[in-house]
Amino acid sequence: MTHISRSRRGFFCATLVGAATAVFARPGLEVTAASAQTKLSPEAALQELVEGNRRFTEGRMTSFNEDLDMLKTKTSEQQEPFAAVLSCADSRVPVELIFDQSIGHLFVARVAGNIATSAIIASLEYSVAVLSTKAIMVLGHANCGAVKASIEARALPGQISALYPYIRPAVDQAGPDLEAAIKANAKIQAALLRQSSPVIAEHIKQKQLKVVAGYYDLASRAVAAIDL
Image 1: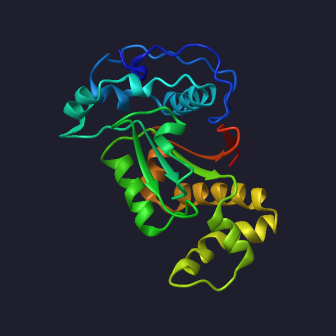
Image 2 (image 1 turned 180 degrees about the vertical axis):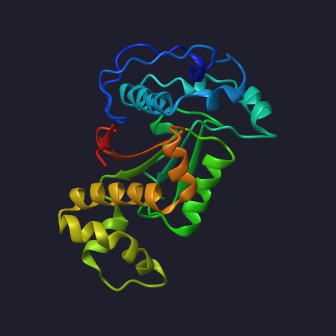
């Protein structure tokens, strides 16, 4: 049995869905079918991320116990991830590890500064409309170089400075405080996804999707919710 199909009971205390006292059960999930992932509710999908990060921070990961040959067989022809993550491209943010997930479980879009560009929005729309992901998390992280560079606004070679306009609203809101700007940026990018994409907005309206923002602390390895 993979960890993705275990029954989940108990209080959901992590607030990523803003329901700290809600109790979630996972009846009817198939033990071995990859399609079981997309049968999760949006709340249960977020709970899966929260519990995976808890396992990661506690050093009791289970994703490596899955049979990779079996996973390859199940995912070679299709993918059915239960959640999508818009993450920074920073090498210190290994998304699947952070949430203790294996092949086929997460749809990950990565770009410096975890910004919602047109291409990123299109990719996440695909994950929602075609792959039926139930949750999207915009994941900022501590000491983000892209946000730091946007605060400093120095001239840089090549196209690096093209990131600045996307992140500048967070800098204008939070000022020179790096952590505050990183959290503001994640919150703003999540709001952009909710508001600028008719596909995402409609799925949220139909209660088929939740979009949240999170902050990954490099030292503690914990992901904390950011209220939208």
